[in-house]
Amino acid sequence: MALFIVTSSAGMQSVYGASGYQLILAKSRELASSVPHAKFYALDDGFLMGQLAAAKDNTAPSLSAALGQLTRIPPAPNNSERSILILGDHRIFPYFEVPNPVQDRIDPDPNVLTDNPYGSGGSQNPGDWLRPDLLPVGRIAAGVQIRLRISANCSTFRFRSGRLARSAQAMSRLQAGSGRTPARL
Image 1 (cartoon, rainbow, N blue to C red):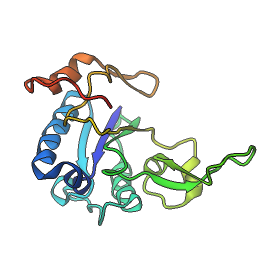
Image 2 (cartoon, helix red, strand yellow):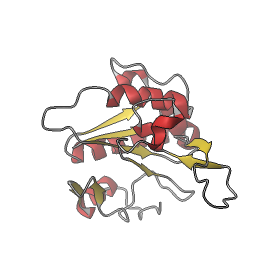
Image 3 (tube, rainbow, N blue to C red):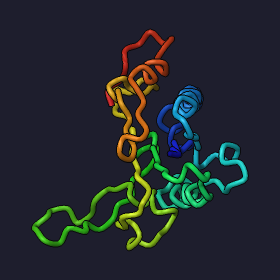
Image 4 (spheres, rainbow, N blue to C red):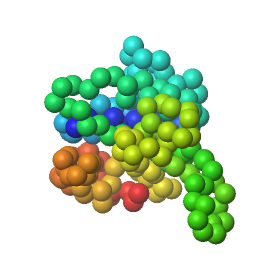
């Protein structure tokens, strides 16, 4: 199981400043190294994207296109299942706003926020955003109270039928050394 852990460097810096982003970058790399077959990418950072084109700006379509490059790389032979974990709320990594697909009942929301398009391999076609073969997408969104760490309240990750499970112990290692209590997400 491969896990793409992604964020936006511009979004992180606009919310947490340059020094806050550097701390989050270090913790994100630490998270990726603690999960087998996980890799961390700041999709709009040319250096961190390596040979791939970085997102041109901090918009959902641009970030999706950059992420699509990663997900189209052929997987390793014994590692074909993949998933995506987005770090940051809408201020950092914007949601897509799409027309509400629910037509069979009265729903006051004409549009809904979703991360589904990020699992579509960079497709900009709304018809692709509801396909059953999309990559699973999760998000750790920060609230007002975030203290630049991932909460121990997220004690277990489960991706795709529980194939990947990480304990609270791994999450606690990310928080070690600060002396602060975990932030609530």
